[in-house]
Length: 285
Image (tube, rainbow, N blue to C red):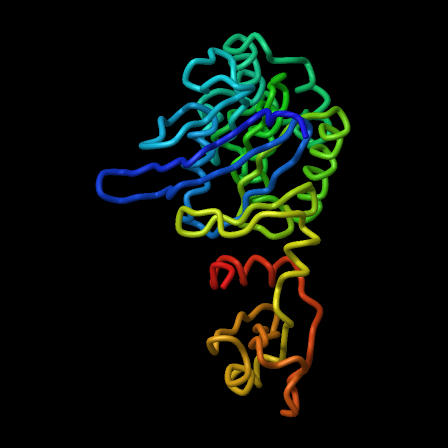
C-alpha cells in the first residue's frame, strides 16, 4: 500500500481540563473515502479541525502528504457545519468571495448550484435561505476547491432524503476522479459513500474497517413492536433497546444464538443504524 495522503498519529486535544480527543490514529489513502461516524459530542468536528490544521493537537501529529499540516500553506478543503457562508452576502457573492480567497477555487460551482437547484436563488441573501439551502451552498463552495483532501463535517445535515441522495451522487463523482474524503457524520445513511468507516466514541476510534466488515461484526439483532419493548429489554445486551418507527431493537447477548420464545420478539438483519448504535453505545464491547 502507498503512503497515506493524510495521517493522524496519537492525536490528543483538550479544552482546558476537558480532553476531547484521546490518542486518535487515522490513515487515509489517496482516492479513499473515510466516513467518521460518531454521536454528537464525540469529537468529530475537533478532529476534522486538527486534520485541516485549524487546531494544533495537544499531543500527537497530523501530516498531509508527509508534511505537518501546520507547515502547509495550501491544505485540505474544510466544511464545518454552519460556518462557511457569510449570511449578509448573497449566494453569488459568497461564491465570489471564496473565489478571490483561494486560488484553487474552480468554476465547478456553477455545475453544483444547478445540480442542487440553487441557481435561481443565488442573488438572494443567504440569511433568507433555509437550512438545507445553506448546506447546499456550503457544499458547493467546499467541493469547488481543488484540494488534496476534502474534510466534510455533517455534509447531509438538514437535508431531505432526496437531496442526501444527490449529495452522495456528487461525492461518488468526485471519488471517480480519485478525490480523497474524510466525512464526519452522526447519520448512518452517509456510510453508503464509504470505502472505510471509523467510529469515534468518547474521543477514541473504537472500530475501523470496511462497512461490510463492521456490519458483520455486529451481534445478532432482536426486535419487537414498541408495545413489547419491555419484554424485549429482558432479552437483549445490557437491557438496552433502541426505538425507531414503532419498532424496538437490541442486541442478543453472546451466549444466545437465536430469538427467544417470547411472542412478538423476532430476529432481524443488522443495519448500519444498528452498527452505529452498537459501536457508539457499547464502544465495541
